[in-house]
Length: 150
Image 1 (cartoon, rainbow, N blue to C red):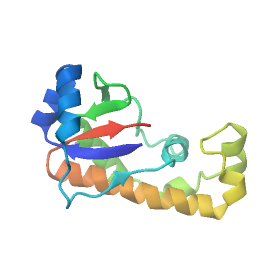
Image 2 (image 1 turned 180 degrees about the vertical axis):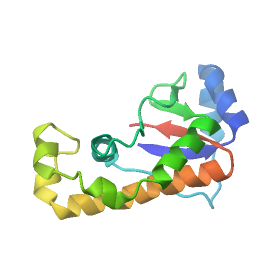
Image 3 (image 1 turned 120 degrees about the vertical axis):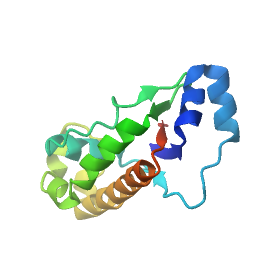
């Protein structure tokens, strides 16, 4: 999963129909100064922690699906709201809910939590920092986000 900052106008264009979205995605390059919103395979582990901590942050159903499989768009208001929630949620609060046995038992992807133990927690910490950074940066610019999965 990854997040890429886009202007509200570009996001609206990409959401119109499949041809617009494909054309936009083929030509779009995010600014080099933007933070990297690539979460690798940590998305499910982060989802588990965010839900276990009852943060109200939903990385899957807040966005609006684009007319291209695997892409969704976050409008600037949703970005700003989520950035605020993320900014108020320390990773230490999430880490208190890290349970490798439970995570592997219920099948939280990838199945590494028991095997990697505290390294798995570090992996989630690093990717949570990237998630917070990309949302806060986009909110600061009143931008939307493209979310890609796969």
